[in-house]
Image 1 (cartoon, rainbow, N blue to C red):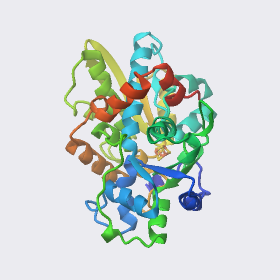
Image 2: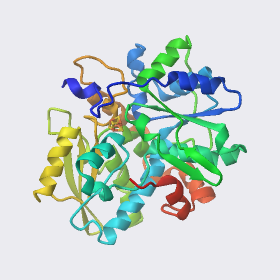
Image 3: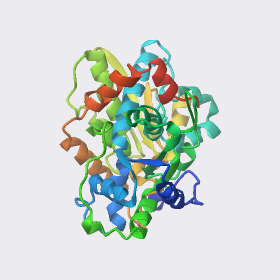
Length: 382
Ligand code: SF4
């Protein structure tokens, strides 16, 4: 109940990073490049009293540009990139027998990564090495994109708009590329801080227009969008893993059993088995750290066995993140999740591997998932 809109990862003293972003915008030497996470679009309008259907991501992009941000991108793009890397990693670890009696865990939630490091350190090596979409996008902005626009990575200031307070800690990770030694991400603002910036810039929400994100990292698939809701990373990864294993796409909705039925219906865990090409994959998606602890204990007692497990620290996933608008006593995560599922089912492209801009970035820069350069820029040691 009441914890849904509060950060479960202990980040109660909230750091305000809006000043840092205003300073970067004012700095003539900096090119400010922003990304907006999927879950933000499902909640930002609540505090501005906008109707849910009016509070589109295109208007967030417009607001950022009007505040002086130079380039705006949708984290759905790098969520697709994460899926390409993580699905590739899963299939390779699965087929070489590494996952025989222990699953691979997702690693895109810093609240979960911090929890596993402190409470279950022996499980750390089972985390996927793929960076989160936030970090991957930062790395891409400072390398591929910097080269595209002909500037050095030092001139790029990367900002991410996230539903999450723990993402502020995740950004401390380092990035090395050629001469450059710095960070993937320079500043993280929460959905609440975004709203604060819109207000202090005196932007009237009624005047915002739908604008597209910039090129060349423009498109994001429906699979990338559902990263913001519990079970979504798993569903997106399975859509692509299925394609890799069989050479064809499944119906985009066949992995629906990993979706949460709502908070009262279960204990925050969704489990399912899927047989693909004669191989059975046992998967689970869990949200909330209490539910996660219960699941890990059951796994350690040998009561359940999985090949791949998605964990999100916030109940309901990022839609219920600690950086989202707070409404006392309201359980909005499920409603916000439905908004993301709606965007996915309306999306023209619903598979990460069919995102054309993803195909281009592999062709021009990364070569293929898990390539040497992908390892350097898109993966991390935990
Ligand atoms: Fe952040 Fe999402 Fe993890 Fe919550 S579930 S801590 S919002 S990444």
